[in-house]
Length: 524
Image (cartoon, rainbow, N blue to C red; front, side, top):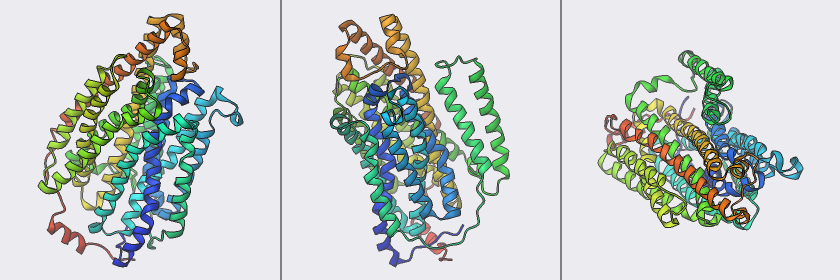
């Protein structure tokens, strides 16, 4: 595919459509943050505490498996229409999520299952938002100018990560939790209107063949692995026919995926990039980073609102130390790498600090004050800040210029799939530990509270007998801290992998800029 160079006169047009692109990206980023804060209230109305992690897992899994496909379809059928379609699917999914468990759909009895299914559908649309926004910038802007626009978009994404918990908390405290999904509609409509009217992409002819077989095999294999980590030892025994069947399905599909990708004209996941040691190592680091990031976002609001008694709005505020620390460190690391050209130290340092943050979080109990939790998650945010920017940078620097898009999408894919595995595995650990703790502390009353259909609401805790309430809070706190204890085992792998990264000089000096400018193809 020929890359289209933007004429100087197009710069004004780029600035006109940039707000629409940023709003579309904000939709994907903001949604998970808002929903995470609202989850305790959602569970309180729909029930199914043991299925809590699936609300996040379904969304992330839908996003992960659809992201590579959206990029290929955009190449084949035109980026603009496909981008608008992904926004439309996301908005339809948002409406359905907001309606889950309503009387129109049969009431709250099946509400949690409906929400999980609708979140997966919403995730399918979200998969096209980020990848196509970045691709459209690539269509409109030549490589030498691309960094400034991507920098603006990165800043907006960081702002969305900070604003999400605050918006989610305000909606949960002052409106119905369903508005955590309905709030996407005005943002989506504005983005659709701006892009439909103002976005005019250069015309160029492309002949592509979508690797449908590879995409199907990858999607089935990844989904089977996520189901194993979610159901194994919880819904089904590890040696049950269901788990063994899923394991066999994962092995067969992923084994077939390798020869299919080697023979595909345009593979969904080109395997040649993994021959580079740095790329393979940093993909593993990104996977583990996704593990930590989504795990924290999923369980911290539950701890803050239930164990510490914070309102939904305050629990959003209490996440600010993590988001703020991560954003500040990311900016510092970006400047330092630009100035020195050195980058190996940062993923190693970030991995060590992230492991320390997980260890501190694992020490939390029912008596841990909110300010102390804030310090712990700030430490975790520091570690994430050292990692978030450098994983993409090292991935892109590890491949040739022609494989830059592949490196970017693969890096995003591994972080997303790490989030899928992290949420599902942490959810299974949480459910097992909570059920065991409740039964040992409260007996029959604990079994009733641990059942999947039990209505759970932070406000309803005050109606429980004192002994039952204290036992429940102790069980919940121990189960959540246990999640972070297990997360340490994965976090310590980050600096170990990063230590083997070879520091290859970064492309992009003055000579590289002149060379890149000379190689920009003209419009077909």
